[in-house]
Amino acid sequence: MPPTLDLMPLIQEAIKIAVDRSVADQLKHEPDYRRWWSAKEVQERYGITPTWLSEHILNQPRFQRQLDGFAFNYHGQMGWRFEPLAFSEFMRKEFRNIAKEAKS
Image (cartoon, rainbow, N blue to C red; front, top):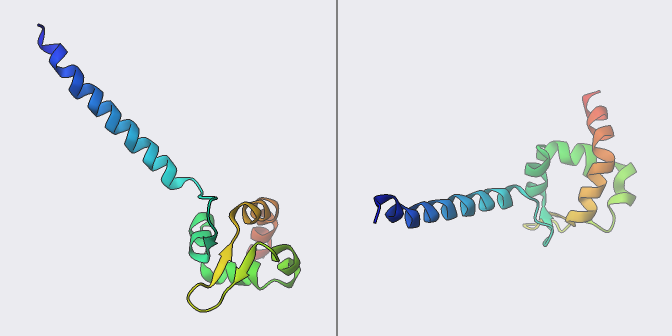
């Protein structure tokens, strides 16, 4: 039997490990829409600071009506929670204008 055949199980296992690692890395960077996001997760996802989130979104009177129903402040340890699908839609719609205004 040629020696290359003995390598096949090792090559197959190496491929499986590489694919599993690749899938895990991809899932790590995809948003988790199955649970509500914390303010920290929103900040990490959009690359913003807690102050920026508060000043330009959460404490803006013009957004209060829009945020009602998918962004809640539980105060204390829980803090803000965001329903991911609705908040993502809000950010897709509003983020460009918010960022422009924040630069001004």
